[in-house]
Image (cartoon, rainbow, N blue to C red; front, side, top):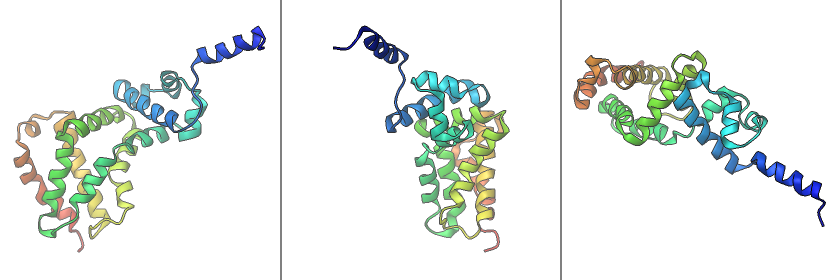
Length: 202
């Protein structure tokens, strides 16, 4: 029969609500981190606060992701559909490559499922040089590590950087010159420049 002190100790451990490590903990941490980053921004979000939301020790988050930059990068990795859609747009005839990439990229920001996430994470990153760099690296550098069907990697990075700036102006800053344009017209205006980047030094 367990002694009263043993029962009390077990109850105390349960009351603290600490999770053990594992895949369920990783998923819960990423969900909580994404919500924290979206609500409070990158700088105001702490590992300790995320750990408290999930009910784990902060050291477990550090064990999984190393630091806050690593955790933010892991949250971005949840946007797998974004990178897949961008990569898919780069296959097909070269003659309309710029238009395909431009439309695909901007439609990701227009869609409720991916757009809300992209906007919240960009808002979280703004004001933090390290988080902004991590976000931009996700949209450019990580994808260029793949076997992209694009003649030059630099051209791809320039193209996506151009599109990222347009997306921030239209969906984050809400610049009137960009927001008033229908999507089809915006694609028509931007895609020639994107196409030029993609076909650099063919």
